[in-house]
Length: 259
Image (cartoon, rainbow, N blue to C red; front, side):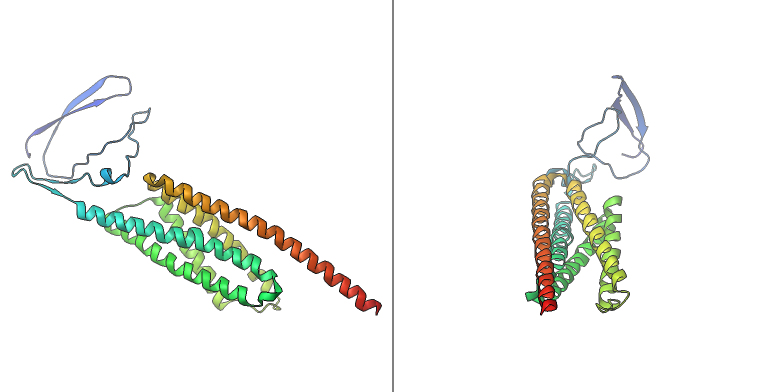
């Protein structure tokens, strides 16, 4: 109540107790949470389990009524889960698969341009889902005041990289025989791989923020390891295919020359 005094006692790192009174001069928000304290006496992050996230509300000390914020918490939790699912599927799974398709399918002559259309369709769908995931993250940050600076900055960087990749691929892709095609290929390759590395890192960062989803983090790591193993196998197959093709072409060239 206004005009009253609150009594505060804190355990210090040396084992002593510091006690003091603090006058209450205005109404404000009171934060109550359960967590651990580090060795230097600073507070560590509290758990993000549902019980912790739903443990707040408004208390009217005059009437004794307590109003819970369950609906708001549930809405925020749902949006956060949607944000995580959209970005994990788009940035963390679909885009690496799309890059793998573009890298390894084009060496097979029988596919023709099919590999390109599959690669473009897969990456376009992933980009659209990523836009929705990015928008949900901005909404959560602006509406609920939830900010995780590194996670947010990497997300913004990813959107810039992906947008640049799309614009360059659609509007500035030279013909295969063009003299500047080599520079376009280098740009496309570098942006692709930088985006994939940052995307995987940011997805893992997101799972760390939601620290009660360690099971999902392990499953995602399993998916990434599986994709990496498949990429290694495809790389070996590709090199064998290319080497055999070069050998066959050389033999055909020698035969034609002799005739």
